[in-house]
Length: 438
Image (cartoon, rainbow, N blue to C red; front, top):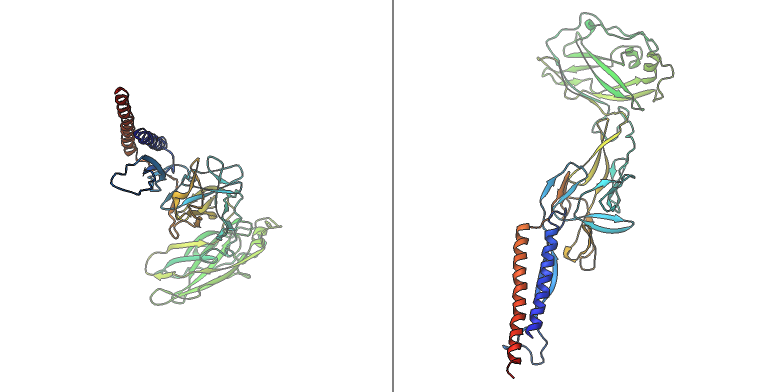
């Protein structure tokens, strides 16, 4: 019987060495999870039941369990290298078959799909017009199309509408020495240059028409004879102000209270005549954009204090067309496209899957696992929800193999193998003694 016991010991020790060697070989494999050999003793069935004289008949390998503990996170230069910090697996698609992985080394294929080194496609929630709606996960595809322009005042996704201005007017200045003079009217090709003697301050910003063409809108502020009152004038692309106010004059008047806070005239609604502006620049047919645009100018927060004029905030909600220049992935898995016009646009959201029993997954190789009846069904959701971990872009999760510990295990299993071999040698000597009795 000792031969059987020792042989089982040799077999299990050899398998333990195999498991340890496999761990050591994958100590640099991204997303790899170390495995541990589990042993169980073996006893022969007995009609008389258990007793003090019961002797086991060896050992067997009860399981190879993988350790799904967190690996170290290492930085890379690829924004599509993504690590999971916490529980969960990337959900991969291969011609309709679904597998799961902790290896987040991704790149784009020629069709814009996010794939791993084996060509499996990363799945998630698709984005429609920048809006992500959780549905059935599908392969994520990055669109290389230009981002369409948005005209000032027509951006439905902006936190404000039109132009937002936060200024401070110096309460100590006096009204201009000369009265404002309007331009010569739409269609006049003479550049409109207001006399600096007719206003106190000016500031400008770019607005956009429906084709994404920029137009410089300049504001001129003139203090009036009334206390706390400022007239606001404007023009477009250096043409007559009558392309904004028919017949000329101010676009509105701001009034301030005794504490310097704005109390009247805000907001102002203006209509800019894009066609007349282009005609004034010698382009009779315009540029093909919408002829006029109407939007508000919000001066909320503007003050009149006894301090120099200052522009604290001046922005608008439109933008030009843009080319895709880069990608970034948030910790919530949302993939943002970065465009040459300074905008960002959601391209999709990576999903994660978790299992009640990860050790029930079937290892497929190439850092992939498959669902089984033992693992239970995948629990799919967005990162950082429920029990799912968070993502980190430009990083990878290293193997969780403790190389020092594995080398010690290798020595231990080697000693176990030698000890079982010694047991066979001892039994051989006992049998040889018996043979020599005759």
